[in-house]
Length: 252
Image (cartoon, rainbow, N blue to C red):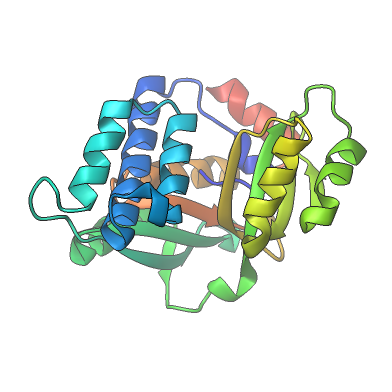
């Protein structure tokens, strides 16, 4: 689940780690295929492919899988699959807004599966534009605190275009314009600061805090959506407090 509020760090302990890892690999492989189809297999002239491969390697996707994805996307192993990006909008418990980003080769299948997952898990689908106005596309980088202070991080990224640094408990979150993401990431690397994830993501302008019962329903809804093959990212303005998150973890 893409982050930007504390609910994003809540993970069910009973979840099978290998299954989540395989799902993550599948999403990264699909991104490589899309980049290779759009710009060809030569990384020298395809910066989007370079980025997609770098993300896959950072998550330890095997090189053989990466190579096959590049060739498959570029049509070197036969006809390439054509994917399209679709964003569905909806509502979760307490009216929390949902943006569900899909990358699919079958729009009808994606729409049907997303609708079913939302309706079965205390959510409702929304019309186009019903919640998207609450979100802005931003660059988001997550990094472990280690021995860093908020000022350490801010000093490293401010001149590169970072807008703010958020304290997320065990980690920091650096927010920038989506167009400044590469420069901010480079600034962290030059300062010797390790980061965990970086992405152009949808960040909410306002948040909705969930009580325990609705937080429990919300997490089931997000889990159901993330299990779908076509779903790449789930964004929300739902916010779960530390106390509620601790209670959810105790239930697992």
